Image 1 (cartoon, rainbow, N blue to C red):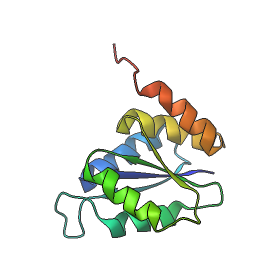
Image 2: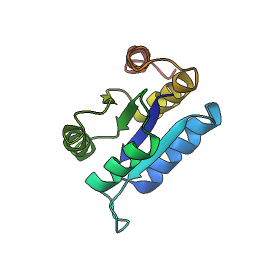
Image 3: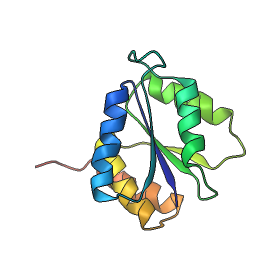
Length: 126
């Protein structure tokens, strides 16, 4: 099963996104990587790396990010893992996490989940 990592500047936000996605897909393998080690807002290379390793399998890991330096930090981590199947998804954080979690527990491969996530990029809420 694909693992999912949520990278946010806020530890609370990363955990809450996983909490919400878990309501729809309780068996999904997800890990938060939010905030800095001291609890401050920001993104941490070490937290992202550890979160990826904690949900990694041969199926791979999909990383969803909130904005800005979360993207840059995740890109740096991925550069240090060239032999691992880890990809970032370009989608809204909450909607993407819920959809990715449901797809992952359905054992969809990475390519299909990434394709499915393109549908939430422009999804209207009302």
